[in-house]
Length: 394
Image (cartoon, rainbow, N blue to C red; front, side, top):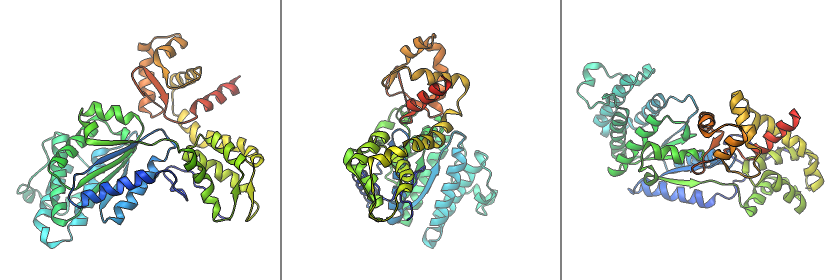
């Protein structure tokens, strides 16, 4: 029997539980823009393991169904926003260049993108589209050197071309919290003006809770531009479905006690449910099998070892010694979020000294600040992992 459980970064599960309302809302948003309505730019935010990227991939499927032009962009700590946006816009322009009736607008869009590419030194010889320097001078340009202004020019040109082609454009940006402030500011400014002009461009993004503060710092009106949708662990009913539904096609069941044990161990987080289910699946011995609580208990240590190696250690090991000491000090608290001031006391230090370490850990995506003076882990059960490390050290 094929294992139906699929833990991974953005891997679509066999059964997507508990997100129907969110998906229906996205469908409404995309249909509204297609019918000439306003773009409702949306950002899914939450801690790791709740399925934000899965939702973004689902949006991609919906966009394809609705005949949108779309591109999935994943940011990391070293992400080159200008390079990526240049290549993405090149793809959109090429897709729309097939219509003879919009030839003049296509040539203008090519020239604007080329001037943008030349201004910011994007390395891609193919972006020239065959437009030479003399021809470039006859068109609008995006070469002021001000990223917000130039990206705005590019987006307006792209949007006007999309209107003529009767197309809609969707930027799908994952890990959006990794954008540099100047890049995020330019993106917000451009999307804001695009909305004012009612152009058919929309952004659907996903990121850690830090995106709330980062976007507000970039532009104060970001909270009105974006619809921030919090993604959390699953409700009990949905968590049960996420665990049990994938096994049904093989006529394999779970006892009530097994379900209770597994959901308690996983906290109803989609990623951890998938990981537990995948490991437990190896114990099934054929159609009609029922997993018991004993089965769930028997693989618990293997489950912990797996998530420690694949989910936790990769994040912990990229921290410096000072950052690791900071994280380990946090587990002295029983509940999270915890107070930065109290943590400084526990570390025999003060807030000003530990603040740079805190900021580095936030920038690395390991911590976030739910409110002023507080910090919490972006990874569920990370405190338990850290306690296991301390236990190993004795």
